[in-house]
Image (cartoon, rainbow, N blue to C red; front, side, top):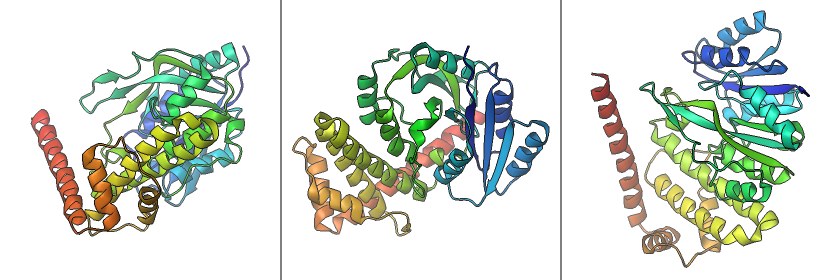
Length: 338
C-alpha cells in the first residue's frame, strides 16, 4: 500500500490536562508514516515543556514555540513547517482512534481523493461518548458534498479531515477571528476534484475542557463567535457566487441573519473589541435584503439600520439571556457532581 507522509498539526494552548492523551493517540497509530507538529501558542502553563519532553524521545515530533495569536495563526505556522503530502488537524484536547490514519489513507487510495472526511463522536464531561455521524450518508458525490459544506449542512471544522497538501497552496486560516474553519473550508472543498465521506467515528471531540474557546463562558468570546460566523457566511456568499450561483440567495439569507445577531450581541455590551468591525455587518444589511426573512428579523434589520436606541436594549437582552444560560449550566454541573 502507498504510504505517504501525513503532517498532523496541533495548536497547543492551556491544555496540560489533555495534551498527553492527544499526543499518545498519535504515537499509538497503526499507520506510522507521520510527523506531529505541535505549535505551542504561547501557553502560560506547562504545555510547552510537555511538548518538548515528547520531542526529546520521539524524532517524528516537532515543537514550535510562538507568541499567543490564536488557533488560526498557530495552524498557519504548522502549515509552513509541514512536509507531508497530506495535512491532518487535531485539536490539543481531542484524540483519535489508533487506526484513524490507516483507515483514512486507505479511503484516499480507493478513489484518489483530495479530501477524506470521516465521522466523529463527542466525549462529554460526564465521560459519555455521543456518536454524531451514524446517520451520515457515505458518499463520494463531490458536487453534493461541496454544496453541503457551503450551506453548512456538513461539519465545517477542519479537524478530523484529511486534506491533500496541494489544496493549501496560498491558503491560510484568517487570524484574529473565531469560526475560522467555517470561513476557510469552502475554498478548500471547491479546489478538490474528488471528495469522500465515511461515517465511521475516527475522531473524538472532547467537551471536557472548560478553557476551550468554543465553550467559553466569556461574553466577549460569544460576541467574537457571532461576528466570526457572520464573516464566514459572507465568505460563503463569495464562494457561491463563483462556484454555485444557485446557492447565493440562501447563503445571503444566512449571512443577513448572522449579521443581525452579531450586531445585536455587539450593541449589548460596553466592552467593545478591536477585532470587531461593526461597519461590515451593517454594510451587508444595507446592501442585501431577503423577503423570506421572518417578520421579527425584518424588524430587527430595520432597527439596526436606523440606529434606534431600542437596539441597545435588545442587545442587553441578548447579553442577559447569555448570562442566564451560563448560570443554569453552572447550576446543572454542580447538581450533577453532587
